[in-house]
Image 1 (cartoon, rainbow, N blue to C red):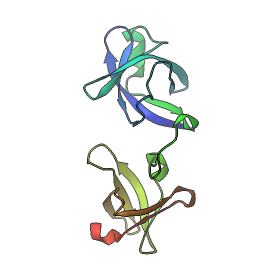
Image 2 (image 1 turned 135 degrees about the horizontal axis):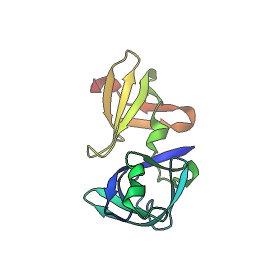
Image 3 (image 1 turned 60 degrees about the horizontal axis):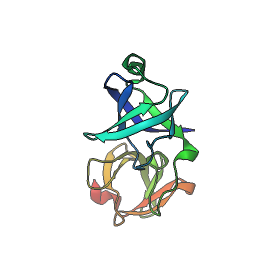
Image 4 (image 1 turned 90 degrees about the vertical axis):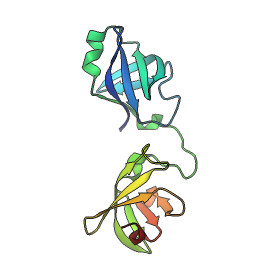
Length: 162
């Protein structure tokens, strides 16, 4: 399974570089020599640097703006096993989506989405069993337990956030 780690936004210069929006917190994800996919094409990163909140990436396989134009709007993916290890109490967003959500022992909905990078902390979007959306801050005082193996997340007093 491949995981999306960035999206190609536009080209940069005439030598095949592209600007990408990274979805990854792993700072070495786009280091020289890293392998990524765009579609089924395996690409090698020759160089990368940050510019105005985006990454500028040069792929070994692309040396001309006319070639790299076809990459615009496409996702950059990696193999799941290349994600790397997380610290305790950290989770990959794609593993949180769809988790059954429980409050006070009762199933109240599912994690529909995770908003990241907008607020000081992540925000879990919970779709309740009665088709409402509740936004929960991903704080230890709110999220009591995340159990990926059992497809379950436990929150404290979900109704306080309606």
